[in-house]
Length: 423
Image 1 (tube, rainbow, N blue to C red):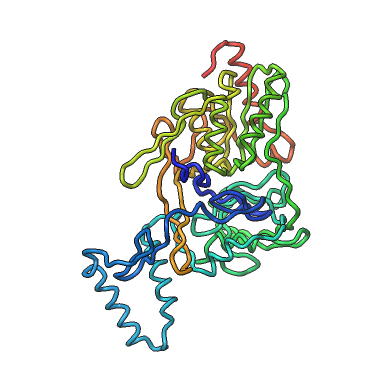
Image 2 (image 1 turned 30 degrees about the horizontal axis):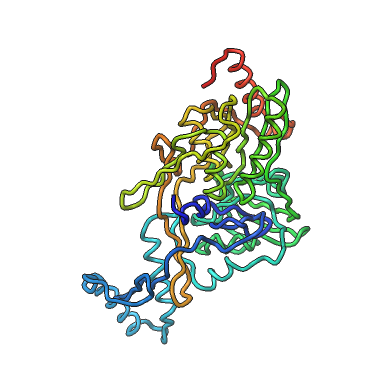
């Protein structure tokens, strides 16, 4: 496994809405702390015209592209000669051409960010860990809610996985990079942000007021349940999560549990390397995922030695907010027959993105560079993982303080132990 691959943010799922930019190499946490927007690779290169840059930064004329670019330069001349409002801003024309080229890929996760947007997206938030408390995906057309954080303002306001933020405080967000939009959702504790939400199945956009707050998100929670069942709930795949999981498992296993529930509900993902370390706690050896590249290459990732919970009976809880790193872990456990998945279909984030800055401070291009596959070669992008046992968690359940998914997981483990058979 290459160093670049290991450090990439988990599959680009931008974790974040609410607290501050994240430490995740690929995105922001609207709820955590923050490094640059990406694991930068290579050297930037102008993407227009007959001049491009090689990896050393030198320019050269790409062979065979003169004829291909003739129509572009003809159009360039036409607008400069004919357009009614002169003079034109050549920089804006160049940026628009790059944006159009990337849009023509037809991939919602690939995009262009101009220098100002790129700068804003990378600005530190100066310790302002306040917002609405939601994991978000910043790789589509609009900022999309992956999952509200537990007991957060976003959850209290009724935001749901899949909600798209199309306007903030009445300002249309169409055409604005979601990595920049996310900063408009952040704000001082006690202030209110008005979100216009596009929700699947709703006849019209939904207007929601969310009162911002200080967000303190635990990395995980661990407890022993009735029947000597251990319950480990993981909220994110951050830089310290693998160590926290290892220590929590050590403490839980010291209590001799009969089975273990790994709870990944609402976990929007994080770092790829963390996902690999955590899945290795539950799978002792063998393949846990593949990465597939555009040239047909495939990179294999295997479990790492030293896992603490490779033999204990296991079930995994997932829902529509389980994404990216969560899906890598859950998909490996399901495909390898290590345990059953219980709950609802996961989010469906199955691609890897990299942000590549362009030369001369010309912004950056985010490109989908690979797809990840489960050990059985399944692609989960836009499909998600289907649980072995589907159990819905309704608003009525939440209001009544019930958790039928967790109850079903306990039943599954206890039943399997009684039968001495485990899937």
